[in-house]
Image: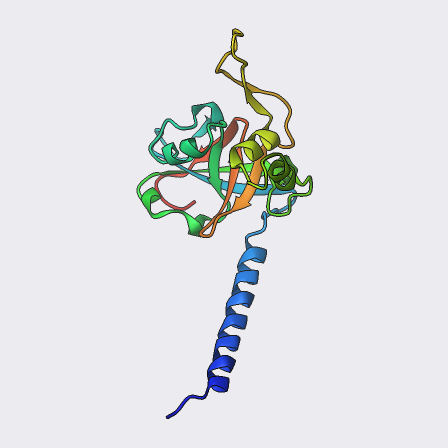
Length: 192
């Protein structure tokens, strides 16, 4: 069977359309989920408390102290705690870790995918067209470091930012980073 150029173009066009539709669906399904004004977040940790249902406070000031966040620390030292919004999208290295859930007001999370305050655009304008994610995190969170020569030199100082957390998407999963301490409930090593 001989395939003509036109037939091949048509097959490619159809495949491309299906791919674009699937991608659009993924973007829509991953937009910041909210039920009744709150968003359920999932956090994984090496810390296993005594029993199910125990509540702990996940403090962003502890960011970078475990092996999972060291890579993110290299990109930006802004204090933050990572949460998934879709439990099925967790990364493989969290298979044998403790699962915590938190419920936070959706209004406290800045949606970077929609970027209503044009944070990304403003950061790019200041950085010659380069999107500096460290600056994006600082602008949204309100975290700054103490100035050189002061008693706060090098310390992280939290002031009011745009939001207590920020939602964004990677090619593989959607994530919320929280810039303030969050109470979370332990659910063992499996799904709640």
